[in-house]
Length: 363
Image 1 (tube, rainbow, N blue to C red):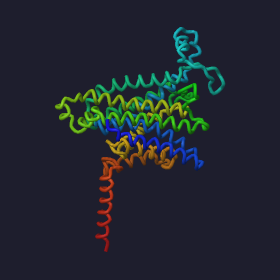
Image 2: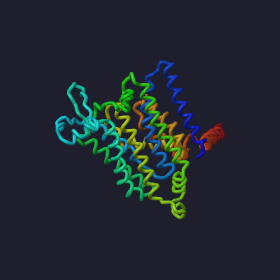
Image 3: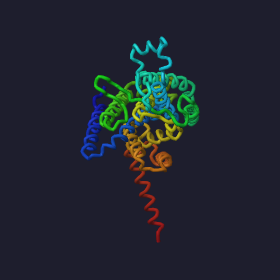
Image 4: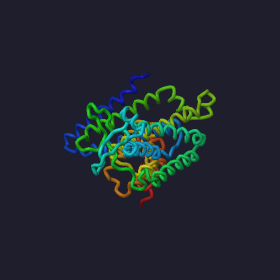
């Protein structure tokens, strides 16, 4: 393995530290909240970049997987098991420390599953659903695949919106913090006093995701995925198991989205049906398009930038319209991503030619 591929990872680690120090020095700690949330959304676009840019599969259902992760963990960690505390299975889970006791917002005693149980259950259920969806859906191509994944996302949205256990339109609230390591009080929650800690936790998870993705891209699997993207017929003729690689990449992208959903839900302390809307999925696709379909670092940069601006409210009520316009502009002028130098040159050349045309037309 070429060690040079880890240089950008090291640069990312240093950049994360420098940004935190600058923010701390400028007394603008509130920016860490949006940067932390952006990190969890970035996990979704990293997986989508692998799926679209390398496996060549379009998915408009990533918001559905994000919601599955968040909702499964939220329900398991907020559902009151106290009426069943005398049952054998709950006692068994209690001995394994998979059940915790806490108080709700009103001070009432609450017995619920540990966030670690919610995390592993969310990942397991995501893998099963991605497997069941991916086997038939990934046989489709082009816009047929996009429509099928969009349909999946709409189904998830309607389920969480109309099911009582998922809180319907109100979503699930009072989600406890995710205690990662009890011994050192390492916890994911939205507490102001833990802003710096949560910032580093979020970006540690993103860096792990990037290390996995970079290794995958530069491995034999990555070469197989690029061959599939280039020509499925040629890849098949060379002995590449197309169905297996496409399915595994689809599952990996779904798992990354679910993990982002789990951690963001515990960080915010709640999740609502807005996280499962089709517009959210279109946002993720737009970010990958801006960063570059096969440019995972470009996707990371644009994912952080656009999500941060959106969370800070810079786009106002036109938030969804901005992401839709970005997607259209990129598809027209820079289909390989805005950060690709050749694309920037094409855009500059286009506007220069337009200006020259106006000068000639003017009297």
